[in-house]
Length: 319
Image (cartoon, rainbow, N blue to C red; front, side):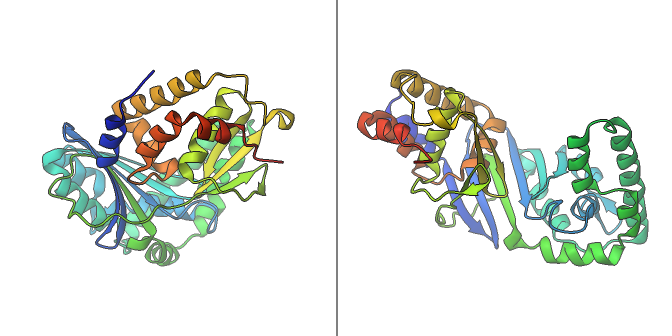
C-alpha cells in the first residue's frame, strides 16, 4: 500500500501541541467535524493518595455551588463521562461545535472548583459506598480485578474515614492548570488562540520491569512496537507516561525476518488511515505516543527509507 507524502504532511498540519491559559493542549483539527471531542487528563490516580481519594474527588468534580455538572451539560446537549485509573483521572466530553466554548469554559470551572457542601459530599459518599458494595459482590472470586478495584475505590472503611476537608485539600493541590492536559479533536476555531507549539513530551521505556535506556524517540518506538506486536513477541501497556513491555520470547527479539517490509508498511498505513477516520482511535494514539507536529511525516519518511527501516526493526531492545 502506497500513500503520497502530502497525506502525512496534511496530518501534521492538523496537529498542534501548546499551552493556553496555563493548560497543556494537544489539538487535532478536523474542519469537517460537527461533534467535537474534549478529554481532560488530570495527574491524580488511585496510587497517589489514600485508597479511594482520587475516585471520590472525581465524583465531587460534578458539583459546584449546588449545580450538578451533568444537569448543566445537558442544557448544551453535551455527553460527559469520567473515570479514575491508578495514575490519572479522565473526563471525556462530546459536544456540538457551536456549544464548544461554553462547554469548555463551564467544565473547566468545575475542574478548578475545590469547595463542596456537606450535602454534596454525603450524596457522593453514598453513591460510592453502593458502588463498592456492587463491585465487591460481583468480583469477590476474581482476586486480580479486586486488587485493582481496592486501589481505585478503596473499601467502605476508607470511604467512611475520608473527610470533606481532606478531599478539598487534595483537590486544591492536584486540580491545578499545570496538572491538567486537554485533548481536543474536531473544529475548535474560536476556542484556540493560536499559541506556539511546545516541545515534544518524551516517554520512558520499561522492559520487564527494568528501566532500559534507548535512543528511540516516540515515533521510532511506535514503529518498533507495531512490528514486534505483528510478530507476537510482546505485550505492552502504558502507565503514567511510561510504556511497559513484556517480551514473550526473549530469544527471538532480533528475529525480524519473519515478516516482509511491505506487509509491515501496509499494517502501519492501514492503522493511520483507521485513526484518521475514528476519533476514539485517534485520541488513543495521541495520548499514548505523545505525537508532535512533524511526527506523521517522520513515520512516512521512515517507512519509505528501506535501509533505516530495516535497521530500526532489526535492532533488539536487549543485547
